[in-house]
Length: 141
Image (tube, rainbow, N blue to C red; front, top):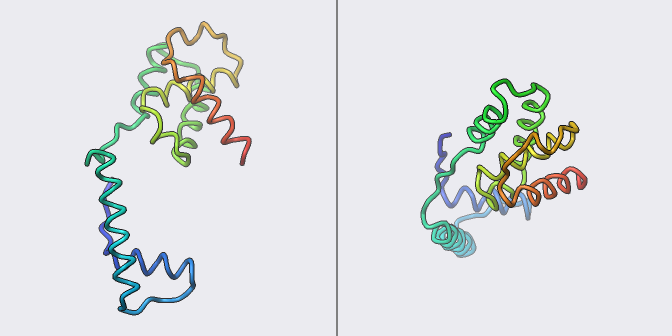
C-alpha cells in the first residue's frame, strides 16, 4: 500500500465540483473549506491516536483455516476469502479487530455451506455479531 499525497486545495476543488458542479477560484470560501478539511483530518488522527497502521485480516483468515484443518475444504476457504473481501467495502474493518473479522467470515462461510458447528471450536465472542452484520450488508444490496 502506498500513500498518495493530495493537496488540500485539490481535495476541496474535487468535492465542490462533485457537489456543486463548479470550480472554485482562489477566494475566502476555498481557504475556509481547506481549513475545515485540515481541522477534520486532525480530529480524526487524534481520535485514532495517530496510529494509522492496520493489521490485515487475511493473515488471520489463512491461519485460522489452517488451524481448523491442515487442508481446509476449498469451498470454505474460497467463500470465507470472498466474504472477507466484501467486508472491505463496509465499515466493519473499522469497528472490529482483524482477528474477529476473519473468524466472523469463516463462521458465516461455514454456516452457508452447512458445516457442523463443531467444525469451529473456539470463536471470539463478537463473531456472531459480525456474521449478522455481514448478512445484513448482503441483504441490503
